[in-house]
Image 1: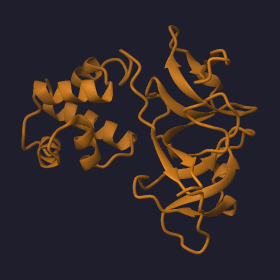
Image 2: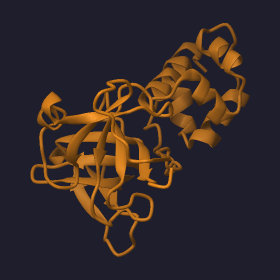
Image 3: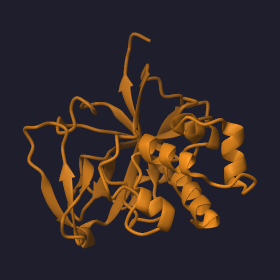
Image 4: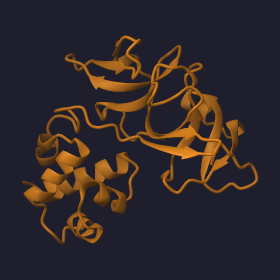
Length: 228
């Protein structure tokens, strides 16, 4: 095993998931100070750490150890998007927190630059569980119910590499004519992907990867609870 390359892949996963080292340590069940030592090279990466990452994050062991294949190529990972409840309050005077955009990502296709233009910001939501770098948009429709309900908000995060797909996770997928929020599943043909809904009344869609104009990872699902 190449210790340095495994550390680089661990850092890549932490970065792509938008997690802090402490949050990642909690998810894989190791002490955060020990994880820091692994990532800094002060502790050698061992089989126990690798197995914890593979089991708790649904990661491909082959990819983590050797870099071959894709991070989640061996099996669909458990959905990493966390559901959080909030009271629907969007603060306009207080600019702290995550920006909320007046955009329904299922209502049409816009280039990312226009989608996240500053004039589309309607306010901010300050929830400590949402990592820095996310943006909040709304979702309509019932294709992802009950995981995502019509009228829910989602916190999305831009990807540094569109070729590295986390199979089985929820993404905003942008095509030429429209956007969708779907699970992205691996296709037997590497030039295609499968877009799957949560609602069983919707059929799977097969889409060429070359037809995908953009993708955003769904980091959090925000259920509006007015009783809060």
